[in-house]
Image (cartoon, rainbow over all chains, first blue to last red; front, side, top):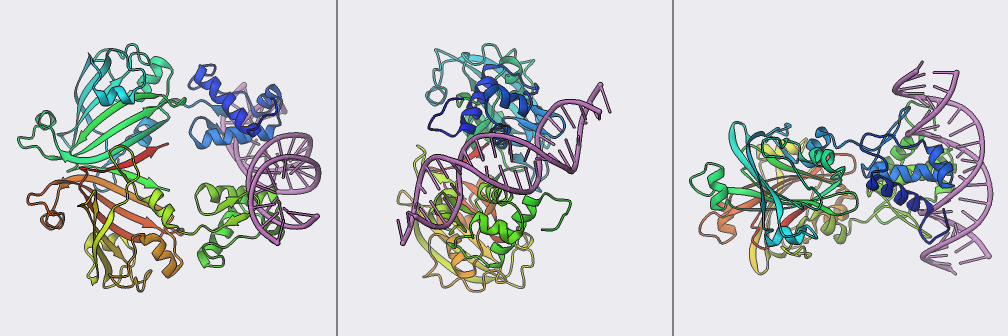
Length: 236
Length: 236
DNA sequence: AAGTGGTCTAGACCACAGG
DNA sequence: CTGTGGTCTAGACCACTTC
């Protein structure tokens, strides 16, 4: 570890992030112990600990007393509870049932091209419908760059939990997402997919999902009927 | 500091939170230095530091190198950037202009009574309209318990930034909020207030705002036209 | 110069998991 | 029993603010 302007523990943090991003350690792997990392990097255990604590705070590693420090699996559970923000009107956990989905290569719409840097000539587009309480309630258009996800599989094999699917395919984890919400009358195509004769008011969500190096891995548009669900946000 | 089951630094944290909640230190005040607190509480500086670091992470105190540790003012700036989640379509900061507002005592609607524990026979209700880009775009109904806010002032004197107003009046700070978002056709009353002949789709936000002891200080319903704005969420 | 928080180190002991 | 992370301490030095 050389002397530089930035604090040592941030340099250690970046070195560790680098190795995770490289795939040096894979999802599910345990990192070396604090003492081992300290010896290897030539810093004290306390400095490694501080770096690991900041990573844990960002959910980039998982620390378990007596066991070790782990690169987290993108478990379906975490994807569901952390990145799926819809819940029932009473606050109950809500699990939408898959209805149908398609997979295609499409020319990038301008918004998708702008969101996904380096979009290339065409993108993967997953279109899917999901139902809540037995009625179609959610339509999603999910854009992926082939540069990041060369082959998502087929429409039949796409699982419900996409983020863990991306990780299994590519080693890339979604660690952060930014949503922009608005209300609009459902576009005709969406209203039809939701089985509504008249365009109903829908909650529109535009999402950018980032990997741990800050690249946009996924650009997603959702339209949701909120008769039986709502989007929950906690502002700390 | 007595020996107990919970870690020392959490006991220190709670002692500090208690004093802030008590008003022992007021908004804007500096806390004693780490060494002074350590001596007073009979623990090491490192333990006090760890407690203060967790408080800073939760925005309950403000630490500034060379100056000290402060109980944060509920500045209009923080209220705006942290708890006001609307922005322009291009991501630009957005400042809605106040249009008009009223203040009344009303019988608590069931939802407001459920949200505000101990609501009493009636509540304060602030109703206000705000405009974006020159057109009415936001209607808010804000319920306050007189037990927490005995006298919010008059409709004429209510400022734009309510959370810092609450703090100036009562010493209570909003430190956390939970929003529930849905889309609906604007109720007739709201459509009229927004100057829309037909009920437009609006983003409906139900907010509970908490003080640092976890009580609900405010229950707020908002209806927003999202033609020129959107609600931004970052999921870490 | 004095006082504050920020970083870094070294070492002790505790709590937990697993062989 | 060993090894892990979690807590707690003590002390050194640095960076920043204020007088």
